[in-house]
Structure formats: structure tokens, C-alpha cells
Image (tube, rainbow, N blue to C red; front, top):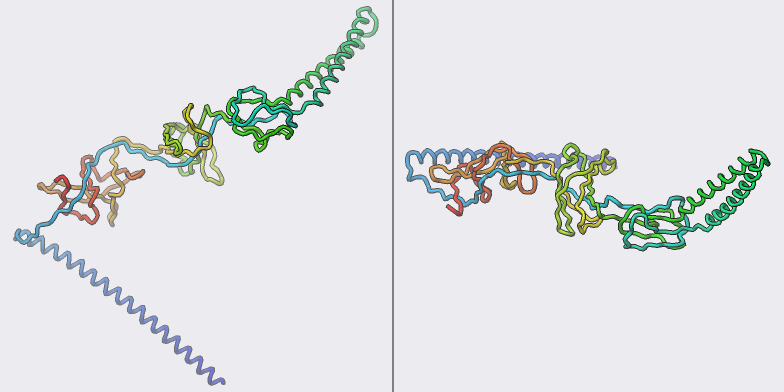
Length: 386
């Protein structure tokens, strides 16, 4: 039995060695083929360079040996100066400056009368709700009886005092009782006003979530919401990395997709803190009055954060990249022929399909806008108009 186990271990060990050897041989073959492929590529590059050099040398001594090059068809456009503007594209919502949730002056109470329904036009100071006031009215009637009694006692005491009967303390006490009763009546009358709920702003009753018999406390979920659309604004959250670029007064273009309407505005308010969850800050822009906008409509906002007058800008798709950096191809008129020339450029801001060019191009350069793919430096080109 021991001999069999030893024999099995020997077989496994031998198989492992063979497997590793096969793997090493395969890796060696791959490396060898890669090396051979790279060598052939290097040889091909050198061969093409030698061919190009010989063709040029031959052209110098024998012009007939040069094969006529067929120009490549391209489209060109003149590079011109224009105002370049970059925007921050965001989404926001329409909001109203005056949105009021109606609240009672006191603790609230049971609704006895409701004088408004959803969609009604409301004026400031209008009575909206009448709350339960039976106990207050009873207390007021009791107070009126007490003040009448106190006034009667005071008048009797005064008559006696005029006849030099009684003491001054009795007269003063009677007068204080009258004053105390009057203050109690004033307090009860003011408390009775708490049972009347008035509108604090004018507008439209957008929500009426209360009914007769229910308890009114002013909570939004079970109350009255009044919206005044006279003064509207757009509210949006801006990422904190733009905090140095957006200021109060920054120009803004606002588009309402549902109405296909566009407005020009400016930042009117910026919050002074960064949201802990959104990592952004809030900005507001005023909207013109008299529009058909409604609160909470979606708004697309373009905040201008960069603008340059007389800038050079080109289509971003014309830019190419090589080991030296970014470049474009232009058409140069050389000896009556159009030749493609490479221009190394330095780019600036990008917005939409246009990108700002800081250097490398000049006004009037003929930029190749179509057919530049596969075009090389010095290649003969032509346009549809030539």
C-alpha cells in the first residue's frame, strides 16, 4: 500500500513539472512572436521612409518619374472672430415669491364655517374660516354682566363720596374693579377674534385640505395654501465647484420646456451655505410677471460663467491629437495649389460643439472641416468650389 501511495505522488509531481514546462514554453513562444512582429513593424517603417526619401530624390533629377498625386476632396471654412460664451447647464423649478400657508392666530380649533374652496381668488384680509367660539362668547357675556355690576357699584360709591359719606379707599377700590372688568372684556374680545381666520396675502387658493367639523391648526397637510403668481422665480442647486464662478447678477437664460418659452434674467440671490447632502448651493432668478408659468414647473437654466469677445472658436470635432498634443489641419495656398498643413493649437473652454482656441490659429485661416480624417501634412487637397 505504501508503495502505491509513493508511486501516485511521483506521478502527480511529474505531471506538475510537465504542466509548468508546457506553460513556460507557451509563454516563451508568445514573447518570441511579439518580438518578431515588432521587428517586422520597425523594418516596415524604415522601408517606407527609405521609399519616400528615394521618391523625393528621384523627383529632383527626373520630374517625369513623379506620379501625379490626386488631390483629396475636403470642405473648408474661414476662422473668424466672434463672441464665445460658456454656460453652466442646470435644471431647476419655477417657484412663487408669495406662497402662504394659512394659520390661526391662536391654537386653532374646530371649524364651524368654511368660506373658501379650492381655486377661489383670495384677497388679503378676507375671512376664510370661522372656528368654534361658543365658550368665548359665554365668557364675554359674563364679563359684560360683571362690568355693568362693577360700574353700578362705582357710581353708587361716587355718589356717597360726593356727599362726604364713606372713605376714599372704598371709592378707589370700586374704580379699580371697573378697570379690571374692562381689561377682562378687552381680553375676551381679542380672544374671540382668534376664532376668525383671515388671509394674510392675496392670491389663489391652491389647496384647501380642511372641512367643517375638523380641527384646524394650520398644518400644511390639513390646511389652506394660497399662491400668488405675480412674483415668480426659478430656483436651482449649483454644484459647489462653481462657487467662485457664479455671483449675484450673473446673466442667466431660462427655458421652460413645456411652454417652449425662453427668458433672460440674472442671479438675484445665492445661499450662503453648502448643502451637506447635495454638496451645492441654491440660486434664484426672477421671472417676468404676467406669464402663464406655474410653481414647480421644470426650468432649464443656462448660467453664464465665462465669456470672451472677439475669440476664435472652431467645431470641436475638427481637433485631432498626436504625441505632440492637439492639432487641426488647415488649407494653405502654395504656388497655386491647396496643401494641408498641420497647426498645433492650445484650446480653452468648450461649450456645445464649439471650442475656444487660445493660440495656434489666426483669423482668416482656412480650417478643414470635412475630409480631414486620414489627411496628412503636405497632402494635396481640393474643395467643391475649386
